[in-house]
Image (cartoon, rainbow, N blue to C red; front, side, top):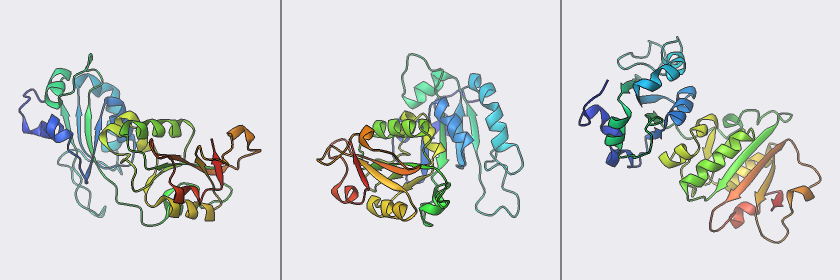
Length: 264
């Protein structure tokens, strides 16, 4: 239990440090997003909760850290011999809402949902989409993929992720120019649901061509001439990817050219 706002164990969530981008860590805030993170396969390095949140989160905490084979560890508990990789440590810190608000600089009418976590970014996918997206290699399996082309606003990225998860998306693709879906604001906007999806970042035209080779119909949401309303399309296959373009420029020309359908 931490009671001193100057305690160095809270330095990661201090306002200036929390807002600083990190190439190694994903910064997660709100108890809702932290819960989704803990349910995922990401390695978690630090969790900062309020004592009142502990009972609700205890089932997921205990499953993740206490059961044999869990992919996290309590602080000081190393990986067993033979598990490989560097030792994983996770700190669990408790502090009341007023303290966390003071340290983080986040001011809300209620601090009930204030919580933080730090997770390691996963290495980039180098094995191709077939290994990254569940069911993609099975031509008979249903696949729904959302692709984001150059979105710049983190809130919009998170909102798109929420919608994709609601519609049962299989994965999220992002162009190299797209806002990072693991940006702290994007994660918060997604309510942590980004941790439910495989995320692949890369050159979108090449990724879409790879999908087409695996029997996935590609579509772009555009306003250019030739686009059809969705209710004008006779039928859609059960394997498709939808590209949503940036707020200002829409879907890039080279991305649009490799799409089977143009929708509006």
